[in-house]
Length: 496
Image (cartoon, rainbow, N blue to C red; front, side, top):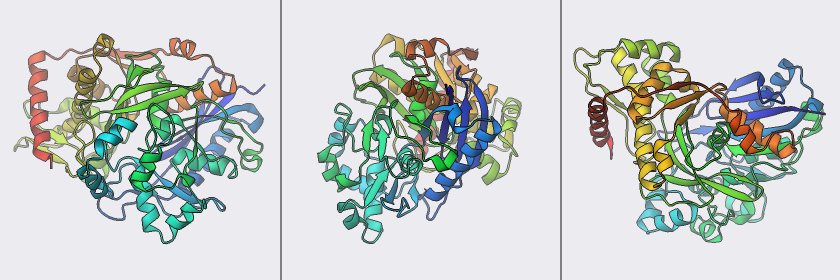
């Protein structure tokens, strides 16, 4: 009996494939970098063919590395960068335009126009989202209008839309499956939170033909079988979730009040709020955390556009570090009397500010400031933004558990002890790093296992998740308040 699970983690900067054993322990990893394209300021794209070829290459490499054959794999699970938008020809599977990445801001004016028409309240009430270029709806409309003949072809049913999961599913199954899961659907700005279906009024508002849409399915279940020629035999696909929801699942956040923060290119914080959606009054998002057995569980989410990307900018843009691994030592060596702040609005500011026109700034510099202080400010910025999100979540959801819960963390920056200690200090709450940092892939693998019957029920899976170590807050409250006041002053200076 096949008991291994294959996770495809298609992220913004790389495509990864991991094989897990029956105990959900990592047996092997393969990774391919994925370049970002910047055709104009504020525009961010990717080549869909690169997303596909890196997926194929990563899967083949990890199967070889772990000595796994198709018949050893019980199921595939997919986690993906979420709002990134692709439209493709149904007959050929070829994209009609580059993928427009979630970071892209080209539709800011379209969102502003809809906001000026008074549409934001309706959109937020139905979808839990704000009118922002971040989400898929305005990206779809832009491609339909920018590519000659695309809108007419879409009306005739010749064009398919999908987030990256849908595109990969279509390719993996040889075009037999055009589907998505509820978590990804909830990020399109076209899906009703309560209904769990695409909304006709929203389709009309954004001028998107229903014929392009995928079928919405549970996060664990039947998503078809891969083409036999791809991996030496067909493999069942049994789990799909957007990357942040997959990480929430991988962290075992199945109970209301549990929350996680993932620090990758951006930073994303999700708080499980149970089976009833709660509207945010503090510019957070209400989203579907997962859908199992037809039952939706909801979350409040805060999205920070730039976290690990700021560290990458220090390396590739400013060239003041050679690797992310240097940052902990440099931050620890910085002069604490230098109150330097970096607001990393390199792609605007996300929650709770939602200002697509904000631009980054480093403030508080003096003649004594150097690269150590700038590195420290960069790491601290992810902590400050997390605290902004946590404060908004506590104001939105008045459950006592939410105020006291441990913050579970993952992603590349979670390997940095200095950062996690600062994070615990600035949010004034314990922070836990898991034993398996690959929580996004773990969540995808678990969904595949659940959908194929080889993984335990959620309660059992959650009990088995053990932290690698906790970080306890130790900063004095007066210092914490002073630092946060300085941060909020720095943010006010960059808001447009």
